[in-house]
Image (cartoon, rainbow, N blue to C red):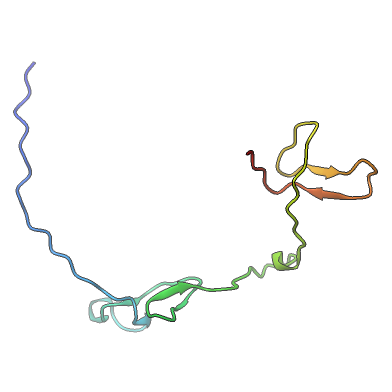
Length: 107
C-alpha cells in the first residue's frame, strides 16, 4: 500500500502582538468593545507593582477550618528505622514528642 507524498505546510508569516495586562477587571463592557489588557474573569490576582498582574500575596483559604498559617511546622532530619508515609504520625522513643509526616525527601 502506498501513501501520497507528504506535503510541507505553506510558509505563512506569523504575526505577533504584545499585549500588556494592565487594564484591570472589566465585567461590564461588552466583549467586542473591551480594550486590550483587561480580564473578564480573575481569581486571586492583583495589580503587580511593575504593571500586569500578580498572584495575591498572603492569600489564605477561609472555609471555617483552622488557618494553615496558624500551624507550626518544622523540618527534621532523622534516621528512620522503619518505613513511613505521608500522613503517618511519628513519635520519639519516649512517646512525648510527635508529629505528622507532611512530606518526604530522599537524598
